[in-house]
Length: 412
Image (cartoon, rainbow, N blue to C red; front, side):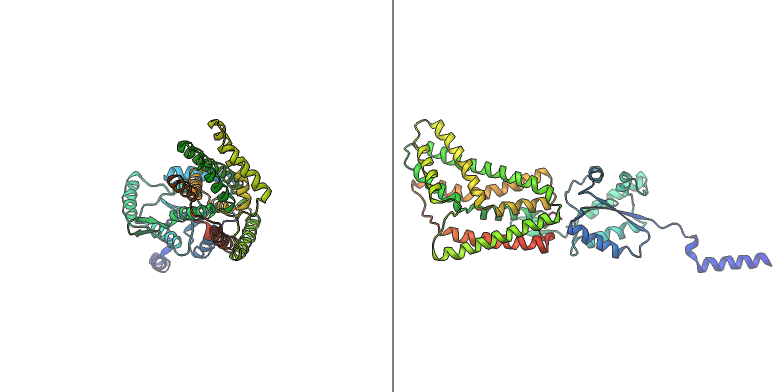
């Protein structure tokens, strides 16, 4: 009789507490690599703090990479293992899924989908990142890995939320298109620099007095090309500095205030130019006369090699003046690049795009002048609009750096 009672009690316990004999639930690990002052990272951490409150079977592991080089090495190993070399933080790995960046509109749903996908025990789960970081790991068999590959191929066929189909251009990705557009716009606006333009116009005037058109082309293009190289070198120096200081929030704020001040000065110059055409305010009349005399000396030089060397030296010295005239835009551009935590190759590509569009107005003006053998009808009126557009851009970017820096982090 006692045995029967015991069996009944045991059966009742099985009915009331089925979980006491249930197999262990799968535990899914999330590995999040982040930067200490990164606003996207802070937003993702806030999301996880809320979302994972009632999920005991999901573990979050965090690795700070901006101040901890050992975590950078871990991330690099994981990127090699996963075959995903995307740059940027937060860099989150869930199973085989890699999610770079965070946005409430896009990646939040991707994170939830990945967690729910691997919590479903009908799907294969392997903690690839955990194997490298030394956290809790659940291995999968070779047969399960084959199934995982098939499942992964199915999911990659879908268009991501960042991809949009545009007429003529086809499919583009919003994550990768923003920085190239910014490079084009800022480079083009920076190119309309009154300090450089009056020198180019005077140089063209002097070149037109030469009889040898071949030499005219060589000297003019050498001036433009050297200007671009020198400007690029200055900007690379700014970029190298910005990559170190971009992690310090108060430095970013200081740059933002500089941008706002320069923007206000540019708008003030625009208002002044409405009454009277202006030119370069950095170079006074005495200095202009010196530069003009140097140009005359170069273009009248009998030995071509000396004229070529003179043009290169002129371009180098002029660009120092030019940077003083429009330091705001290249400073902001390099700061934005540094904030996006790109690879060295990506930095160089965006810088070259910037320089190309920075020089494009000079190239067009010079080519027209050489073909028509006369200086194009450009006056200093265009500087009014360069002051206006440049001032507005610097004000907007400066304000965003203070209030919403995440908007400028396009590599999310």
